[in-house]
Amino acid sequence: MLSTPMSADPLGRQVAAPILSVRELCVDFKLEHGIVRAVDGVSFDVRRGEVLGIVGESGSGKSQILMAAMGLTAVNGKCSGSVTFEGREILNASPEKLDKIRGSSMSMIFQDPMTSLNPYMRVQDQLAEVLTAHQGKSRKEAIDIAVEMLERVRIPDAARRISLYPHEFSGGMRQRVMIAMALLCRPALLFADEPTTALDVTVQAQILDLLSNLVRDLNAAVVIVTHDLGVIARMCDRVMVLYGGRVMEEAAIDDLFEAPRHPYSQGLMAATPRLDDDVAHDLRTIPGAPRALTGKMGGCPFAPRCERRIERCTIETPALLRGAGGRAAACHLVTP
Ligand SMILES: Nc1ncnc2c1ncn2[C@@H]1O[C@H](COP(=O)(O)OP(=O)(O)OP(=O)(O)O)[C@@H](O)[C@H]1O
Ligand code: SF4
Ligand SMILES: [Mg+2]
Image (cartoon, rainbow, N blue to C red; front, side, top):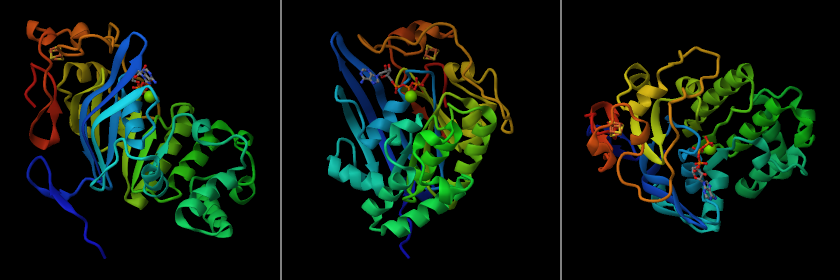
C-alpha cells in the first residue's frame, strides 16, 4: 500500500500533505469599463477527510475560486497564482489535463442541477458516461454501479428511475442525482457550490447528512461554498470567511462560531445557528453594500461598512496574519 505523503502544518506538526493547495489565487474579469478583481490573493490547503467551508455574501468571489480550480473561468477571466492538486499545478492547465483529473479524481456539485445535467439525455446515459469514459467500465457494469449510487443517495426505485430524463425528477431528486454523479468516480476532492440552496430546509438537512456520510466513506477532501451558516455548521471542520474577494478570517469551525475575531465575521455570526438546527441561516444583513471590485483597491475591503474602522484601514490593506490553532485574520485591530 502507498503511504500517505506528509507535510508540516502551521504549528510544525506532521500531518497528511494537502490534496489541494491554493496560493495567492487572483481572478480578474475584463469588462468594457475596466478590470474586476473577483478573487484577490486567496490561499488555502485542504486535506483528505477534511471539509472546508467558504462563506461570504453574494459576489464575494466564492464560486470563482472553485471555477478557477476546475478550469471553468469565463472567457473574459484571467487567473493567476497557483492551484496544485496532489502536487501538480492545475491552474490554467490544458483542457485535456483537466478533463482527466475532473473525471477521475476531482468533481463538482453545482448550485443548479441543470448546469451539469443534460436535459436531453436519460439519467442512465449521463451517469454511465462518467464511468465508461474515465474508468473503462463496460456499459452494463457502469449502469449497475450508477443504480447502486442512486440507491445510496436514496432515490426510491432507482433501477427503474435511472432510465428517466432529468425533468422527470423533482428538484430534490435532481439534486440527489447530481450528487450521485459527482461521487460516481469516487473523487478524492469534491467541490460543492451551494449544493442545497434551492431545496426546502428538511430536504436540505437530509441531503447534507447524506453528503457528509458519503464523503466520509470516500475519505474525500471537500470544499463547500455557501452563504448559509447552518450548512457550514452542519458540514465543515474549518471555515474561511471571504469578503470582496479576500480572506477575512480562517478558523476551525468551533472557534469561529464561539469567538469570531474579524469585525466582518462578528457581524455575520451575530445570529449564530446551533449545530443541530434544521432552519436556513442566511447571513445577517450588515448595513451598507460591498465595495465595487473595480478601480483602486487600497485599504481594507470591509472599511466602508466597518464600525471599528480607523484611519489606517482606508490606506493600508491588512495582511492575513496566521496565529496558533490554524486561526488567521486580516484586520489591523486583530492579532490572531
Ligand atoms: N464573467 C464575468 N465577468 C465579469 N464579472 C464576473 C464574471 N463572473 C463573475 N463575475 C463577478 O465576480 C464576482 C464574484 O462572483 P462569484 O460568482 O464568485 O460570487 P459568489 O460569492 O459566488 O456569489 P453568490 O453567493 O451570489 O453565488 C462578482 O462581482 C461577479 O459579478
Ligand atoms: S482593518 Fe479596519 S476596516 Fe478592516 S475590518 Fe479591521 S478594523 Fe474594520
Ligand atoms: Mg456563487
